[in-house]
Length: 115
Image (tube, rainbow, N blue to C red):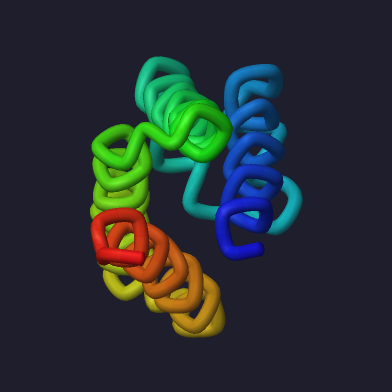
C-alpha cells in the first residue's frame, strides 16, 4: 500500500514538474518553484518519476535493491525539499515532506527485512 501511494504521488508530482514551466507552477501551490531554473525543476521532476518507476519495477519483480535505493532516494529528496521549505518559511509544507520521507524510509526498510 505504501508503495502504491509513493508511486502515484511521485509519478504525478514529477510529471507536472517535467511538463509545466516552473513560473507557471509557482503561481499555484508551488511557490518555491519561482526560485528554480527550468533545468533544476526538470531535474527534480525527472528524479521523482525515475524513483516512482523504480519502486514500481522493484515491487513488480521483487528487486529489493531497486526498491531500497528508490525509497532512500525519495527520502533524501524529501529531506532536501523540507530544507527548502524551511528556508522559505513555508512551514505548512513540512508535514507533507516528513510524511512522504517517512513513507519512503519505511518502504526502503521493509524491502530488505526478512519475511
